[in-house]
Length: 186
Length: 181
Image (cartoon, each protein chain N blue to C red):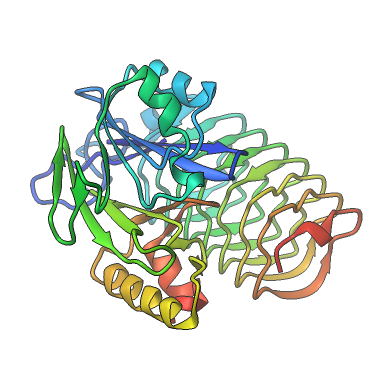
C-alpha cells in the first residue's frame, strides 16, 4: 500500500520519513537509524539518498518511496518489497536473491552487477531500466514490464516470463535459457 | 491516504482501495472482480466504502459491483452515470477525498482518469509504457493528445495506477511510453 504523508514543516512539498514526521532535510535529528532498525519499513520516504553497504535483508518494505537514490553493495536478500517506488535509482552490486517484489516501480533505474536469483518479481515496472551483468535466474517475472529497457550480459534463465513485457528492449548477450520466453510480450 | 492494490486473475484487472487512515473511509476504484481477498482487505483495515469510482464500464472493471452491492451500500460514480455523473473539470468531494476527473475517451467513450492527491488512476487509458487500445488510429491519437495534456500538467513524481499491469510514474510515462512521444 502506497502512503503519502507530507513533511510537518509548513509549505514543504516533500514526503515525511516515517519516524520523525519530517522529511530528511527538516528532520531535527537527521537520523535514519530508528527508521531502519525496524524489520518493517512501512510508508518510509527517503528519496535522493546514498546507501552504502547496508544490510536490508529479510526486511519488509511496504508503501515506501526511495526514488532517485544510489544503492551500493546493499543486500535486499529475502526482502519483501510491496508497493514501493525505486524509480530512477542506481543499484551497484546489490543482492535481491530470494526476494519478493510486487506492485513496485524501478523504472529508469540502472542495475550493475546485481542478482535477483530465485525471486518472485511480479507486477513490477522496470521500464527504461539498464541491466548490466545481472542474474535473475530461477525467478518469477509474471506481469512485470521491461519495455524500453537495455539488458546486456544478463541471465533470465529458468524464469517465468508469462505476460512480462519486453517490447522495445535492447538485448545484448541476454539469456532466456529454460524460460518460457515465447509467452512474453514482445 | 493509503493506496492498496488488488489483482484478480479474472480479467487480469487491478482494483484499488484508497483509504483514509484517520476516518477509515475508503474509495474503491474499478472492482472488476470481487473476491474474498478484496473483502478481507477492506475488513482488515476496517474501511467503510464511501463510493466506487469506475474509470469505464467494461466488464473487467465493473463486474465485481454486483457482489459488493449485496454486502455494502455505496454510490457508483462514472462518466455520464444518471445518478452520480462525473463531469470534466468538476472535482468530486467524497468524504475526506478530493477527486479530479479527466474524461479522456479513446479506449471507450466513457473512459475517465481520476487524480487523488499524488496518484493518478488511469484504468485502460494508460498503462506502464502503453496507452489503451482504441477502435481507430484517429481515436488513438486523440487519447495520446489528451493524456499528454493531463500528464504534462501534473507533478512528474505523481504515481500512475493503471487498470492492468504494474504501477508507474508520470515521469516514466513521459520518458518511456512511445505512444506519448
